[in-house]
Length: 254
Image (cartoon, rainbow, N blue to C red; front, side, top):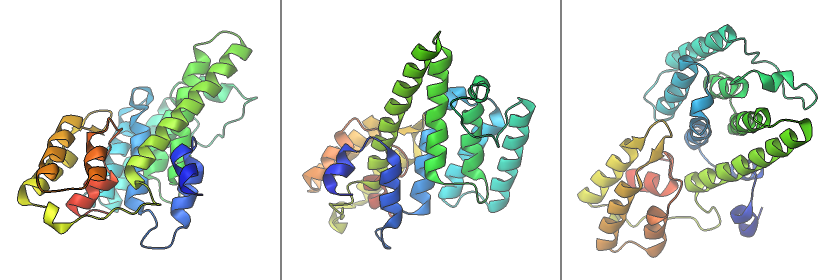
């Protein structure tokens, strides 16, 4: 993958493949992969059929930052699986375009995504993201009458969601062809406090960071002589999520 392909990509899968093949320390961390997958799950929050499945996303996010134990993840996985089963959702089934019944269970993919997120040996960022996109696509399918119109809606919605996921991944990974460095002189006590507050405060349930807080942070960074690229990133509309490469750099996360 080259820089043009990275910036123009409309499917997160090749981007993830590229990031995961890189040599350390340039390779994307497991923490950021988890936060990317969690951000994808939060985009379908309203379709997630049970409260335990929603809690699984929150546990995965806390686990990524070292705030949840392996036992908590296992407990969250078990509760999510049980709650999905009670709703009649077959988590082990795979998507088959000819087997429309799979998509007819509301929340099927939306339940499987967070279950995978906390499941031991079941998690990859790409399959969680794919499940999230499928859930939105199947919802669009169900809203149309006639198979032809429904499949058009399915494909259009799925493609649009993949593009949205690419934007999230760029926020988390930055531009790997232009590695980002932070001048230590920029990290004053005020900048650090603002950055930590921006990381802590999110719009829930979407999980997106507060653009107003990021704007205030950018103003403060401008006062200490930060470069234009960093200021532009924080002032851009985003999306900005936990794992944002620029915010992570300021608060010392990887």
